[in-house]
Length: 414
Image (cartoon, rainbow, N blue to C red; front, top):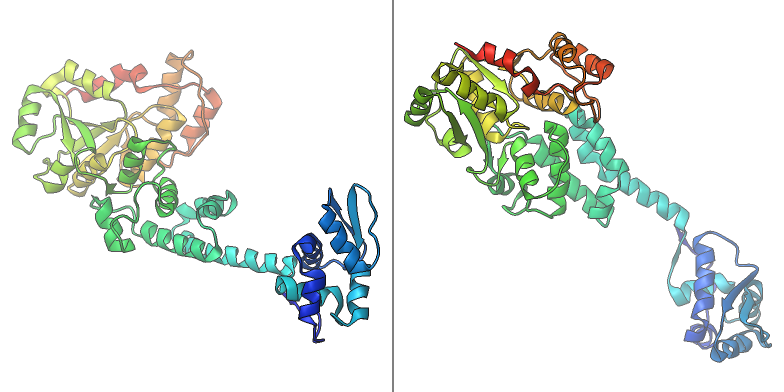
């Protein structure tokens, strides 16, 4: 709200000679601050360690000595009275401040207007969360943690930023996976819109974590894998998946005949030919399971895919292809909170059935390994078996895949 002190004319030339000099800037600034806070222009204001010139200016303004103490004190009522009596500013000090320092805006209403503008800046993300409830908690957190205000200096800039982030996230996950620059060019108007370090990349990547369940982290490799979890690829070679005894290409047939593991890149999976779907395929979290299966069973091992942590774009592409062509997928992972998060992230993208990965299986394994490492981290859910998180919280023991390896190897023997 702009404060208008009145319509009385001000003698600007006399006012600037009397109050507009640099030695009285401090006095005008203090009066302006009072007006911005909607406080009366009464009572004293003080300046510590004034210069002789500042003392002389105050004496000329008031027509009397301001004293010789360590600080210089001036009553605003007195300045207002001088300006009115002299006819320099019939509207008093408020009108003089408005002419010397520009129109005064009360901070209370201004702050309210700015708060409303910031609130409205989040509208694109709120609308997206309404359509995709999995992003609701992220959208609320984005409002509360100050990230957007750090990245965007104004509400208008924030609205533009969040509008583009909403456009990107509404198109994810990309299936089939696509190049990150190509996606940015097609959806956001520029191939470099999601380059590392840009505000848009920062906000979009935080949304991707909420969308895919990808864990927190840092570094170039983490960012590459986080983008890939939503099907956005920096390149087609860095994303890979470890397999055993899949068939359908000369290279896979050769490794399956030898009972040796094979690594498939996303480039191979995107450009084909693709592996032949089997009736069923097991999925594990840790490479040790796949390596031991190759050692123990060789070409006789059942087909197996290893995630090696969070599902990569290559793994998601392979498993989606198998599922879409009739393969039954069975999953096992570590019995801990991290393992449940990985399993849930995969389940959001590709349907699977638990492979010795239920509450009953965990209780049986924990009974055999009661002295296992303690369960740590934040609890999470298990959509395939809601009783599993309850069992983990009750027993508090972490059971890694290696601890139940003999049971898994028995299932993998054909």
